[in-house]
Length: 115
Image (tube, rainbow, N blue to C red):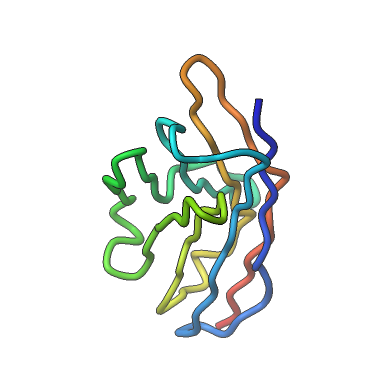
């Protein structure tokens, strides 16, 4: 089992940057895949970015070139660096961990981008 706690959300103007953090309650070294998802009001939750245990990354087309996912296994933390933010990036951002046969979610952190 693993608990995930997100932080770093907030209000930012369009074109600005934010860095989200996801702190895990145990080592992330062997976790298959960790990632970030987001859910805007009235919309379904969608994939933003993932990173595997081998540090392979994957991004949604809408964030490629603007967002970067990374992990620090010494801190058991996954990050999402977001740049050139747009109003359409406004959503609750959730951290996710795929641990063999189980999926875990954080409580989410709000990101609001003003125009």
